[in-house]
Structure formats: C-alpha cells, structure tokens
Length: 135
Length: 135
Length: 135
Length: 135
Image 1 (spheres, chains in turn cyan, orange, purple, green):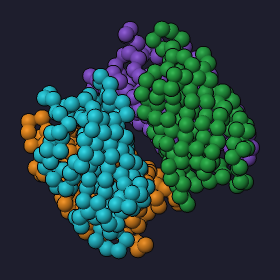
Image 2: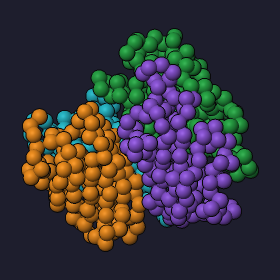
Image 3: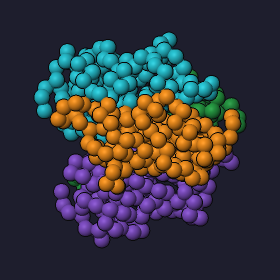
Image 4: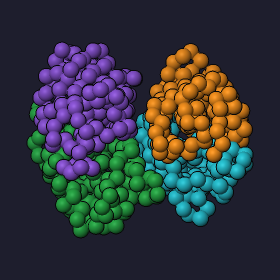
C-alpha cells in the first residue's frame, strides 16, 4: 500500500463518499493521533419529534470508527481495516458539532488498538470508543 | 412513552432523518425480532478508489445499532436508548444490499441485550453486533 | 506450533494451571465447537455474605475466554492468543455448575472470532461472550 | 445496601473468596479510582510448557472486572453488579505482578462506566478494560 503522510490525511478522509455523506472533516493530524469533527445537521438526528431529536448512535459510531481508523493510519502510514469496534454512549447530543479525538494505543506488526473520545461543543464527553485494526 | 405496536415500526424507522440518510428500511417485525435492510449506494462506500470501494464500517455499525434497537423496541413496545454497542467485521462488502437481523436476547426491567447478524446478498455473514439498551 | 487433534483437547485444557485453579474441564470437542464446564465451588463466589453469594464475573469471563479459545483451537488445530474479549452478564448465578459452549464463527488466516454462551444447571442463559483470536 | 467508605474497600475486596483465590489486593482507593494488584503466581499461568508460560487472559479479565467494579464502588459507595465487560490484550505477561488502575468515567443514576489499565512490573501496558455497571 502507498504511504500516507500526515499532511495528506485530511484529503484522504474527504475523498470517502461516506465521510462526505456525514460531513466528517479532519481538524488535526499528528503521529498516532487525529481529531475528526462532525458538524451538527438535522439529517443526523435519530428522530424528528420531541423525544428523538438527538444525534443517532450510528452517526456517533461512524465518527468513532473514522477517528480510530485514522489515528492508526497516522501511526503506520497506510490504510487499515477495522476488525472490531466498541462504543459507549455517555449522554445524548441535541445540538452542536461533535469532536472525536482518536489515539493509537498500540500499533504492532499485525494489529493496532485505538481509543476515541467524543466531546460536544461544551467539551463534555458524549461517547467513548475503542477499536482493533489490522495493520 | 407511547406504546409502539409492531405494525407501526417500519414507519417509526422511516421517520428518522438518519435512517433516511442511509436508506434503511424495515423488512420485517416480529416480537423481539426485526429485519432491517440497507440498500447498496455509492455514498456508503469507504473510498472511491480501488482499495476503498467497500461499504464503510460506520454504515454497518449504524445498521447494527438500528436493528438491535428496533429488536428491543419490538420486545418492549417503546423507544430505548443504546448504552453500548459492539461490532465485529467479518468480511468487506463491495456490492449488494445488506440485511441485518436483530434479536432481543434479554429484555429486563432496566436493561435489554440484542444480537444482530448482518448478511450480504449471497447470505454470507458480513458483521456481527451486540448491544445493551436501557429499557 | 504442534498440531492439536480434537481428542487431545481435554488434556491440553487440564494441563493449564489456571484452568485447574478454577476447576475447568472440557466436556466435548468437535470441529470448531467445544463445551467447557465450571463446577460450582465456594471459592468462585464474589462475596461471603448474603448479597455477594453469586459466582464472580471474573470467573465467568475466564470460562468464556477458555471456551472461545478452545473453540478456535478446535477449528485450526493450534494454540491461539486472545486479542480481545467481551462478556455480557445476563443473570447472577448462586448455585450449580456452569456450562459454556464455544463456537468458532470465523477462522481466517490471521484472525478468528468465537461466540460463547454460558448456561446454568437449569439451562438458563447466564452470560454471553465474544472474542477475537490471532490465528 | 450499606454505605461502603473508601477506607473499608481493601477489606471488602479481601472478603471475596474469588479475590483471595487469585490473590488480589487493593493498593489504593480514592474517590472513583482504585488500584488493584495481582501478584505473580504459577497457578495463574495459561500453560506449564514453553509456549504457555504467560498469565491466563481470564486472570487478567478477573483483575479488570474487579478494578472497574471497585472504581465504581469508590464513586457511589455501594456494591454494583457488572453489566458488561470488554478486555483488550496488548502483550503477554511472563513474570511479575500486575497492577490495574480502575477509574469511574461516568457514575449516573442507573449506570456507571469504568476504564481500567493494567501495567506490568516495568510499567508497560498489558491490557485495557472497560465495563458498564448497574448503579
């Protein structure tokens, strides 16, 4: 696989049709650590009515998968498939952009582990994620 | 919360902006078990180029969250928030609709557990999911 | 690594000091599927007093790790390290042996996934497990 | 349930038959954070022979369950059952005590989430854990 330097990662992320569908953008890339932002949009909501006007758990899981994956890419320099993903939802989000910080905890020869923390616009934790990736 | 009879669930699912964004539709609803379908679309792909033309793991996680959630709704009769979600990716998907079968394994007074299996159009397993929901 | 035929697996399991510490024994081994039993013992209990007289979650996690691991061994024929493990506790166990059935869901060139179901003596589900193993 | 002050927690931990079986001891207890130690012992090993002389994943999972559980107890003041547990194994351990630091990330009215990091005697990360507990 081609090497992916850090400075190209925001473009690599944007070239994904699914990332564009959700509006994901990379805010920062450092070795083994990235920040990915998901702006608030009505079509990310779980429901239209009173009780459902919070960001869908699937959108948050997508943000976490992406931030974890790119944290590992930022550590190893090439694209890596997700082996498994776990998400803990801490509080519902009713407004404002979400910011996910992904960090590669381990980046071995065959496997990598990444941790992701998602914060809302007030800096409150919204969800935690952890994933295993194939390196 | 209002009671949600089985026959209304396909409509409830469709009323979610996020479900419409991904194109999710409910194929079947029985007590504690639902089938949710995600038709193949270019904008669910992880990448545009050769190596990335597979359905994004976040889209599959969204399908799993939705199928697990609605399996529990189909068991308890009201909307339930996801507490945590786990996804195991078994093989990449490059074409065709995905079908997720969600089953409520446990539906207690405070918590429910649901299992989800995602198959591709050939009936091959693509991903497994498990989630805990607040009842 | 040496090949491990199915019929040797009960002995392989018993040769582990930790399995002996917990009293684990293999009841059955078939290709990709094993049954492991953990007899009830006072020293597996979480507490001595009224509210704590149930089998410790760590003992159940150990049983699940072992059953999942041996299910993969029964599929591939050699020892495999656990990459990650997940356990869902469905109900507390206050008496009787536990029986864990492990099944290899996937056994690929680099990774395997196993599912484990733990039942109590009445056949009621006690816990569910899933793990990823390095093949 | 009775209130459990921080200073009583090392005793509470020691009163569990299963904790004594594994040799677990509490090193430190602060609000929402505990450190639990598992001394190295031959009977925690996965195997007796060359390739198996590492601490069994089930013992590490037990240590993580215990540290997470007590971190939540140290936050809320009473005993809490584990709802689910996840363990990521980072490297095998062949000698020396393990030290698990558990932290309550969230302690809500109905649920708590705890993170656990396990280090070996050289301070290297051995495993990561996360669990959901019923408060």
